[in-house]
Length: 193
Image (tube, rainbow, N blue to C red; front, side, top):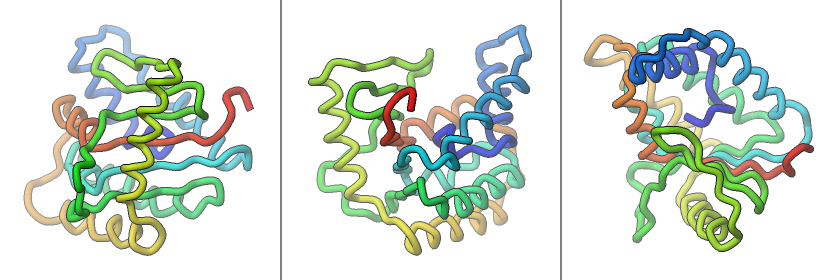
């Protein structure tokens, strides 16, 4: 789930999972959550356009307690109504025709791409490499549904959470699945502006 779209509960669960996985002695999760939530102000600032593409599987993978994940899905329905936000969801049944899920990446204009890795974020600034990510984003974006069709996919996901196994805490192995399965965003705004 892209950081700019996460709820505080989802971020908290995910960061505690990372902390457990890496056996980090310092507990700075609360500060990190506050910082991530503050960053979301850009979505309401009116400066820039933020285009997010996620795979439908991201909506359905149970990586957190049920209440947290259902709250996250509800938040997506709210944030997708913001004028600066375009949220596309690639349906699981979409004909891929050779378009594969990519690693999680964020495009900050056409000068910088941040690629999420297990160990951190790799910043890509070579024009030829950025062109590869731009093509990948365009291909993935072409598979995505938006508006009412995206809302329908989001609204259908909670039913899956409410049936079956009880909620479980986030786990780093499951969080990795989310990244692999398409946590792609393109931030169409100039850096520093």
